[in-house]
Length: 565
Image (cartoon, rainbow, N blue to C red; front, side):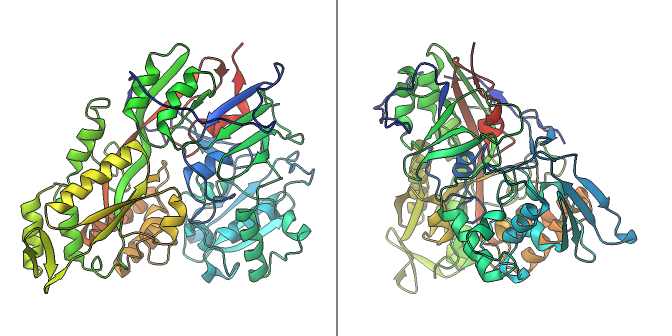
């Protein structure tokens, strides 16, 4: 599969104060013979593994790049590449014809593949990872809360034979994207070392004990690695430091140390880069001030392009007011997406495009516009008030009421970036036009705030990829841990399940679009647009490029990073 993306070079003046960046040496500059790259991650990862709902952020995934092994990824040109350092061969579709028997496929790991303690990687690592990715109903794990259960829940049996895992799906089920079970886009963004469970006294075939192992992986900084680097120092509040994995069997890393400072202060990027304190970043959110401030700096490469992460506004249906679909429709009608997009991107990225399908971009063969036929996202306050009036709501002065009681106020939450801060202020003003008070509250724990449903209205981004068959089930299925606002709709569940088990991409797309249409009717998620993503790097580094088809972004090939000659 190949997809194109619009790209724009931009740029002009940023401000700020730079925080001190420390290495494992306590902040001292590296020795001259230490080949070091400092690459910023622009928010805090919340856990040490990405399988869980709380840990499944791009920040966690990028922190673990080069540490957690995976079986393949999409490249910056949109083509897929299997990881033949980790795999002995491309995965095999043993049977894809349901008339001939159950859907079956296999993965075989490279004969030289070992963990950083020298223990060989085996099919048991794959089996246990798939068990942890499944929902508790599958019986593997009582307390695992995987952010993406669709593929794992389809599995009937797994046969681990040395380096080869053979997966057989349940009767009648197929998986058009089966190759993704252990790749960059999987729940764990790869697979994990099962032998560490036994070393810690846990039996992975006991559902309670597998849950303890799962919790340990998310709570404990990994001293293990299955990639070219391993984490040697750091925490989840400041930074991590990576150095080469001495047991790595692939091409030798060309740098001695990579530091990932977690810096949420976008205003510090330009000064830090100009001072040589950082070598680059691939921030998850757009910042025109930073882009413009970087463009004219000597030695800087800056790119801006439509990314795979799409911004959206979610409503929490567990709120007593927001349980009413008519109120939700009115709220989404009052929000003006064009106003948000133009204010944020009109000057620096005028090629922005509003997103009218939650799963497919407009350049996809499967795209259908479901929002354009509604008033949602139009900012039409009069239409919103008409919806409310018909549902029995009234305006008392500037306050929306129902049966004499104020509606809300609502907690409007997001992470504290320039773009999102501006966006939620605009949303706040849009809602005020229909008498709704929205109080803005920032969070520095995106995963935690979402997984705990600690919000009424939330703006955040989903990191997408060319994969789509399990998206509806992850986003909106009533039993999904990523369905943060607890929407429950049997028709959406059925469409999502059908998409996830469709034998072809065409059928999966049909069911996915059915789910999208139903979600629009429910006024549960309002997509805004695919974020323009920017990337910047110093000319002192080499082999680093942005990858807009992967949540790893530029870190997708971290083992190939080098210093320029």
